[in-house]
Length: 238
Image 1 (tube, one colour):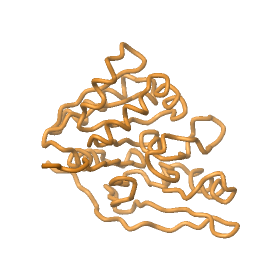
Image 2 (cartoon, one colour):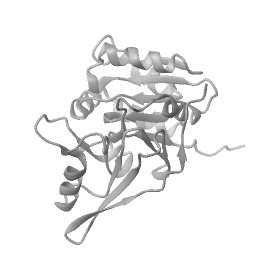
Image 3 (cartoon, rainbow, N blue to C red):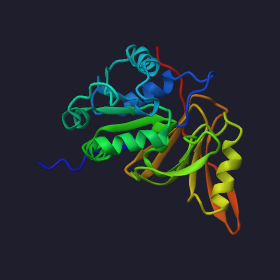
């Protein structure tokens, strides 16, 4: 009997600042996987596979009911065609989005991520790992400015992380939208996750009651921001 296509999930997290407990969002991400004890693979490409990021990943997910691993692209890289599509969940870290995407393209990672996603692997990540799934992302890959960057295009329109924790994010997004350098943009505060099913926003959840998500669109000659409904406030399960 045909079972139909697997459900496709992407979870984009705005970021983690000092006051954000990552555990509730980590647990939310794991709960979307197809198995009760899922395999979860960390891609730390945006940070150059920094050992400190990899250690934080294992410290966080080693306490959860899952099977954590990571795939390096700056060390000895395994067979990506075998490893990536076999994961229940792929989790992408933060860092330099432009450099990450360039490295991924050299290794053929975008096609493998799409294949995994279409096969039911949950795609998730924060900061660079949040915006990479969209057509366009707002990135600080350049030291002197925030800019629009073409990304993977799995999801429509644009996204911006760290909306409440970095003072230049909000004015930059409004400037870029007003100048038609960005399409409609999803802006995420730290501690907020936007959960997409297929290519449509399913829900917004947060681990910080005061944090939110926003849609910024161009109306006439100016940008207009509206808050999106937050479907749930998460707390860590002990």
